[in-house]
Image (cartoon, rainbow, N blue to C red; front, side, top):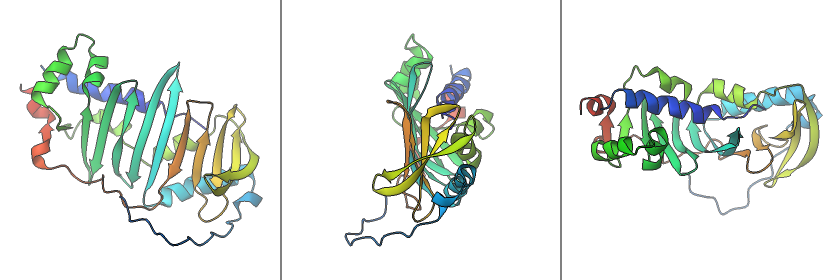
Length: 243
């Protein structure tokens, strides 16, 4: 399955665009959960299982994806809670961290000092942003096209779960207590996507050699983090540009 390293590259695109203008959850249930019935995907051909997994993830009202991907030795940590077109979470490359939030069509980002320093090693940008923004969220302008390639959507699910080659059935085993069937990417046999074989056929883990790999969890949960920040905690990008 294709790696999600595009996230890190898109983060750099967004921050570069910003620089150009500058001078839950639900309460846990203590009762024992009912055992989910087998969903039949284990009997299907591998491509059909993958189709079921994609459809199930798209149909979920929300989910949490967390883990790490790398490209050319650069590791990107991903921690995103997604609810339809809304999102809360972060990506991190070394000490550089970018928090992001999308609520009802409004998008916000919050890079830390190390992130600005990664963009501008002189430290001047980090100093400027600390003065202009502090610890507040930045609300990019509505016409900032770079955001479209960054915030999560259905097309990202397809990209993330699409193999580079033919997909074949692998080992059946319990993953975090959930019975699952592995799908092996023939173009990269070290990449295995595990799909639940009971309950909904959600993808629950993308296994890769350490430190890479992704887990999918908290399907259909309510995420308290996905809420609009107070107006006093937001700085509009256009106002930063005027400084």
